[in-house]
Image (cartoon, rainbow, N blue to C red; front, side, top):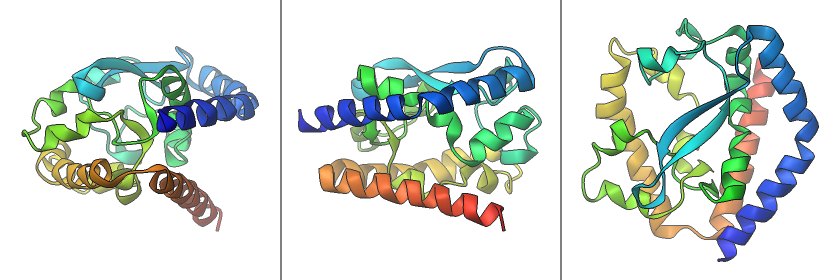
Length: 203
């Protein structure tokens, strides 16, 4: 109950504070590549319930039909605007709406598509006992996941056999020990990592 109140308050404050940013980014996507501003994708949430995850669109329309794994700037499906949005995680901001309506939490295991959650073993399925989140330990560890996958000859196989199991271990660590103090720490670490990345890119 306290965690849900935390989510409502912070997602609402975020949406209010970032409203001008949403307008600018919406125009950035619309003018830059045309087509829809937002991208909706079915993801598996708490207790295996599917929901529509909201993002600013960063890929050409229909790109998800060509594969669910992206490989950073080398992926020709990503628009020029999308490269910028993904670099600073700005494409994830609309998920504050998912948090506000209860599909997601501010902090929790990142939601996967059904194709991958169907591969979870019984122990790994425990990550679906909590609401998925905007960020968690795995998000911090694999903030440059697309670039890592770009180094493999078969990115999807690498994700399934190497990255996903590692992320799930971190997800389970969170599920087994999370509290509001942990959540607050993860949020600040995530913001810090994003700002650090921005600082490096400007040097």
